[in-house]
Length: 180
Length: 282
Image (cartoon, rainbow over the protein chains, first blue to last red):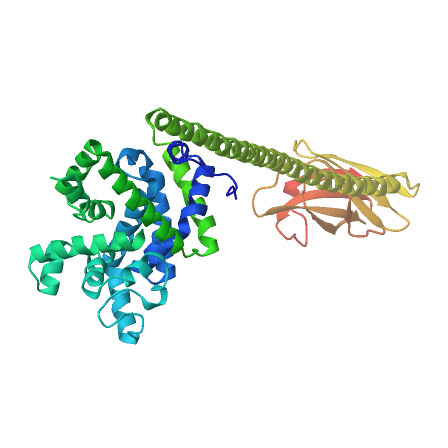
């Protein structure tokens, strides 16, 4: 709608805090796609991802006061809300029952090693993750996309906790290099 | 810790991606505040992350935008009433609105009440009028019946009088008849009695008028006799009724005198002379 207008981030944040609808429309028009892309890596079903995306924007509206620009970019804050909302969805009983049914129907959507959906492997963040070394990719998938704790990953992969931490750090540095 | 070593530790990425624990997060904030290089490194990673996400953007369904902003507007209206100042206003408004609705309801039911009251009053009035009119009808009906009875009575009276008048006219006609001879029968033996016989000598008809005769004892009856050639001839039994007028007796073609005696009921073949009450000569 008002995509012709561009806001400087402090200006946009100020308007968002005033609950200006135009600011939220701007935010949606600019970032909904990016956030949707990330959510789809966690929840491949677009219908469910849409529910999460709506919840994400409602949460941005509700929690904009808690955003502290000194601690990071607005997008980073929104990305964390989106990731947490998506992971919360995957942990809901309804979603897990649904997934089990889907797995019974077919396991085409998932790679053998349980990594990301093959359909969107070639774009954006998932493309970057896909370029990681196998051992790094698994760790990013489990920690970032599935939300497992270091302890859980250690148990899951049967490797020491220290090794999990070291490898995740290495994977993240690898990710940074690929991103820049 | 060496700044460069920190930057290369992967801690910044861990924090930015939300994978770090609270302690790690606090350390990064401290490092960012203390070292512009660390801050710069964090910002660079955030920017590249955003760029990557933008590159991997997948447009959500078009319908979601409308649905989201409808939800946001609803949220906005709800949250608009959350602050204290307006939180107090909301119940006031709802209190204000509900009396308006109630007034409407009262107004409506009041209108209906008046209508109902009016109907009841009309009904009561109608019932009262009915009772009044019914009473009047009954009174009129009674009056009518009375009048009808009176009229019948009058008619009867009239008919009686008419009959009486006819009888009297007949009587008068007989008396007026020039052939009829009145014979006054005066008391015998101090009986204080008086009767009159009207005798038509041409037609032999005999009529008796009882002016005064004592009431006969039970089982007794007066009998009229005609004296023909010195001998008494039965001229008929006298039925003493409270009727004034001429009573037709037996025809007597010839007589010298008439007499009445008190005899056994039903009459006697010959008169009891001791019980003679009146006698009149022709």
